[in-house]
Length: 272
Image 1: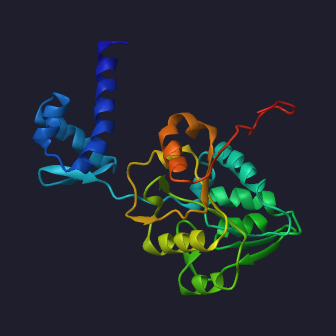
Image 2: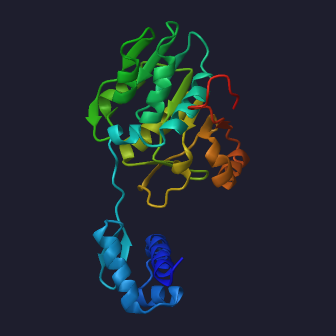
Image 3: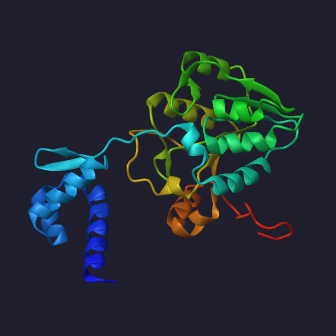
């Protein structure tokens, strides 16, 4: 690697670290000392990160950029293999004849698709993506009404909460924007946090579907739904190595953890 390439790599690493460090409300001078560079170099770094919407510039420093929600169409293609592996593990937990609550989100929609052809099941959802996945199938489908919240395409509000009071699922599958062993599920607004917490508290068995990217988020929303004692987590095999400490913390807090084996796109006849 040339000296120029090495310098560029160092700049890239420094800027990635800066994104996390600006949350600590440190001044430009403090950041310069921490990285062993000049204040003008830090200012150039901050300007570059601000132009890329990674941070917001402030007088004398910077703060982390507000988290921006991604549409459910874009999420559908992200970590697609991991979501299919998680969905297969989740679907295996559902007994015939069950009433199943399916949250909004593309990970949960993958579960809906796997359950949809079981005529003994009743699927209850507040998610447009899950409803679409199960629309042309045999399971009974109940779609909770309410205000359609964009861009995650989930129904929320008074009507949704009223409809939830009329059903009593035996098992629930919930999505999340991030997960923390102590704080719970990260949510983009307070209504979603309230609805998720309500479902976890009332359902005898609930499971969070969280691929490995949901454990590594640093730019999170302000709202959190506390995990109930009956809530477990299903994740992918990457998490078992990259975020093993967080899985251990969940287990220490008495939450069941299932690591889905890697099965997607394997050749026919192979074993996971």
